[in-house]
Length: 255
Image (tube, rainbow, N blue to C red; front, side, top):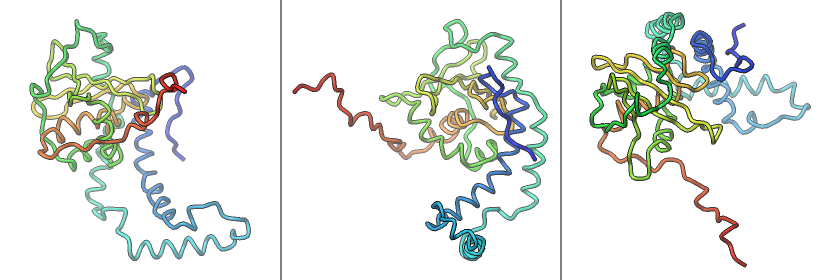
């Protein structure tokens, strides 16, 4: 049995090898979780059942499964040849190291300093234009692409400025800072390198950002905006609502 890697004590990030192997596991596990999620759309199966129902659960699951198989679209694309190509590519990449991570470490440029990084206008960035399908092929999945819009909204300033820094010695290497979704005081730095009109390499300081089998949510968000969203004509939605704006500060309330 294979399981995703656990973080080593004292570490803040999985190694490239650990992240790659974990992504192989989660790629396969996604089908199982999607199936469970589909079954739980039925209210009866989504709740905790009393012990008296234990003898009948198997029958209920089989009935619901049969209905889903008959009337819901298949979870798999059904293209076994394409699935095999994706699997072979993921297996090949799982044995590769993150060269960009090594480059950043060797040159001691992980921190954004004026000596190494300068703010860039997004119009000066030469990166490929991609479709969302092409992004999903690069990330090996759909989940991080779905999160991209909300990450983009959080990264963009109130006046619509998308903050990007370029490496002073190579403007094809970009750096972006993203707020952690789980720890308010934590920020992650995502690095992306473009080469000859394609995405050449990426690295992020988040726990799984060293992997090369797909990209983490932060890198995906940056690629989604730079290579896809900013080239669209329709306006970006308002994104997640800031509920804190509806709360009054007790220090400013008078009685």
